Length: 129
Ligand SMILES: NC(=O)c1ccc[n+]([C@@H]2O[C@H](COP(=O)([O-])OP(=O)(O)OC[C@H]3O[C@@H](n4cnc5c(N)ncnc54)[C@H](OP(=O)(O)O)[C@@H]3O)[C@@H](O)[C@H]2O)c1
Image (cartoon, rainbow, N blue to C red):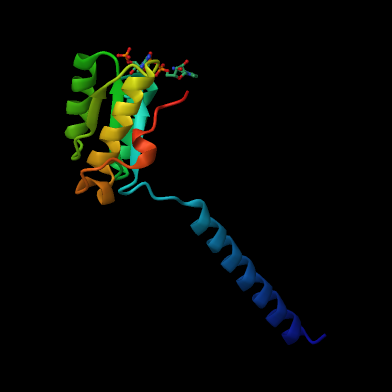
């Protein structure tokens, strides 16, 4: 093969490689902007760190924990970042509380449900751990 042909082939292979790499990178990135995220244990520790990151990424964040005062402090902390989370006191070992919490999250944060008065069937179904 002529030198020119080899160079053209190498350039074409390089171009295809770069395109495949760019496509893989694009697929690997995921945007949390406006995604609804419920973080159990979001009042402190790892849960609060996660809530901060997701708030920064533009997600609609809900946090829950048992201690309402600590939860409120976490909500104020997150509100300073620009978007106040939905903060729901809840003990996740209590199935009824979890069901009610999920109903509230769906009705408050899921845009298509915000104007509806009827909870989604899955939201009102009893929670099974
Ligand atoms: N920290 C680490 O290095 C590390 C490493 C690996 C794995 N983990 C695991 O990751 C998890 C979080 O760790 P962490 O260090 O962030 O713990 P943490 O500081 O003790 O925070 C736990 C969070 O969960 C909430 N919580 C506990 N029981 C709950 C319940 N029944 N219902 C609702 N909320 C409840 C707490 O709030 P209330 O007490 O007010 O309910 C708090 O918001 C734990 O399971 C831990 O074992 C931690």
